[in-house]
Image (tube, rainbow over all chains, first blue to last red; front, side, top):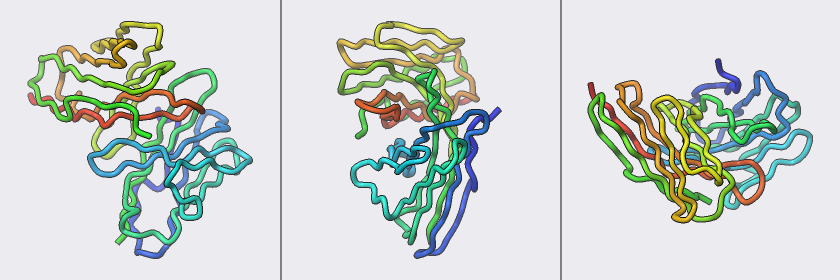
Length: 115
Length: 111
């Protein structure tokens, strides 16, 4: 069964509004989680590394004030897209890192459509 | 930054045939992984091969790794319609545990 969940699975919002996406590690206390973005027919691009209890680490070109990440507990990381615009429409996927394995477990993704 | 490049970008075969996808990468790696993504869904881990391994098998999957050429291949034998998906290779990054993904190969298996 799924070990990482995301909520919501899809969301449609108006331009200018903010949207929060949750990523939960269901069976593991993840100190590190990752947020990726995937545009249609493209690959996954790392946006940021979410660190429990500390600030997220953002990739170059990703605006930290626009994509707010909060990792307040070991099982939950949230990504808030603030003042969303149509160009933010994308598929957002999170994953968690488990120290004993090199693999990552990915959530099912959240489809964001900004009108 | 994106590390891997897969080819072909798209592959269409019939059930029962084998499907081969290739991945090239740019920098040294500790391991390389292959993931599958069904349309509009999350990623499913298929197989991981370490830099000191040359070949690995898992069921109908066979992965090879050539670190001298910085390339890997994924072979799916006796394909099924359910194998229809996009396949991505991913390599570890210089620091941290996040992954660099290739552009992916879209595989269509027709009955």
